[in-house]
Length: 261
Image (cartoon, rainbow, N blue to C red; front, side):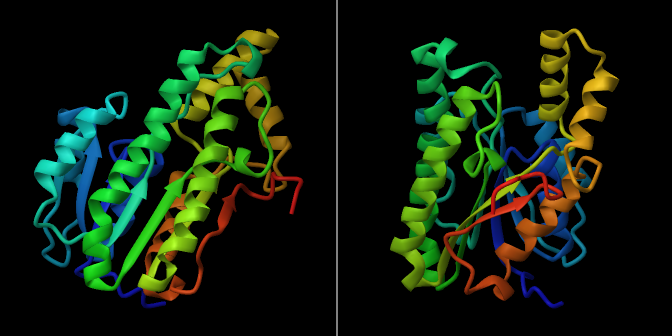
């Protein structure tokens, strides 16, 4: 299938590890020019050096910490003035585990800033050029908790739901400009985040890491965890011309784990 992404420019957040890095590799292989965003410059440089440029495209990066929304805004204001951006992949690490009733108010505020406020700054930074180009794809990597809250992830469940509703609102507002806004909801995926969740479950239950991992995989109809590339493939499709009439959806990539429709 021809995705017609060659020559497009994409911003990919959280692009030095896990799903974000897999998206960067997938898009660069399709001839997309990449602007990577992460907080660690050394990791950004290493990732840039790993990316294929088979179509002669140029890849750059921006250093920003999503714990500092004002700093991100400043970086975007300085760096994206004259750039045409067609694709934005919003992605950042999830809040720490724990029940909602035990979470501090500050934890909710920090997660809201990291996820929704930073996403809003990014959208505002690219929406003008997307309108001018008549092409825009905004893809938010969230969580299956948008459809079915996950146990012991109280802050994450709350904030992910807010991002999903923000995204649907944008989809309604921007569709007329050939700008789509969609969410990808990864299930249990082989990333550092999953390792952290398994370790936390093991600590709280007293069970071994291997036992927890096996239990989690047995709860998935596919009986395995996802590879980051499998999530990246879904994002790649949503970013393409082929997905022009898909707008405002939550797409689970979870091996069938969700019990709801």
